[in-house]
Length: 355
Ligand code: COI
Image 1 (spheres, rainbow, N blue to C red):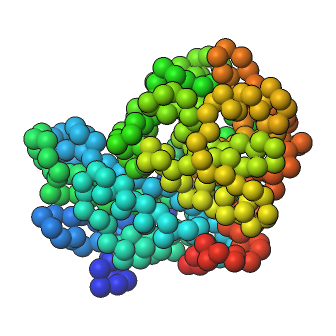
Image 2 (image 1 turned 45 degrees about the horizontal axis):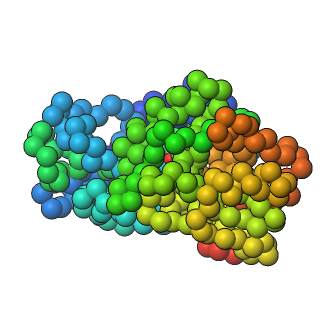
């Protein structure tokens, strides 16, 4: 056991699994790196923080997160720069957001040194798991959940914070086809839509399943009150190019404040493209399609980065968007973002964190 800081101890695996894996060709989220970080919170204080071999954790069947969903998570990625050194993209933004999510779920904040120092130590240790092939990266998943052994409903007094990571390829191999749903909603005013909590994702699965049964990849979510304004697509933020203006739903409290969303909007603005964060109705998008002024649509999220949208089904009719090869904006921004993340170009924003 090695003690790397006053708080973090490391127990290295005696058997690395990396040679048994093709890390440049792993399916999304199925293969996990050698180590994980685990920190426990009990009755008002954080206990020892450990980096240990990746493995199962034991839990009581009465563990409260399983019953009442006091559980939040994050997603971020590690890249290699052109000389192979590991880089993280905007980890402070994930640190900030996990605590905003935790606040909404009535959970105590994760301290910065546990999140940030623990994350860096873990990824330094498992840096060999960062794929070398372009298009593949190391996806990092911090999770934080209540561990009280109790079926009484109340904010728990014990919690576990874990970070695991997995080498992944592209989340979507093709542009995505969406279907507008007014049968289900993802979030309602005053709900948990802006938090990255497990329940939001569990609650989206039936809509997603039905979309797939109808031949689409994901749903395009509308607001919970009027079923009129676009909110997100699948598990991503969404944007449209109409008359050369990027229009994306504004963060009303029902939408996840995406880190990729923020990065993409920043790059568009700095490229001199007009960006509007405002309410955008599905009818406005359908009218723009009809007039020929809707040139692009895309989802934004950590896993997919930018997912080009090829089709939007609304009221039984497919709106088919121009092929990606004819798109002027999103492919360029995606390339610029990837170049920043992989250290191929200088990062004027301070987003890239060297390990
Ligand atoms: C992400 O984009 O990182 C997410 O958290 C979505 C998840 C369903 C992979």
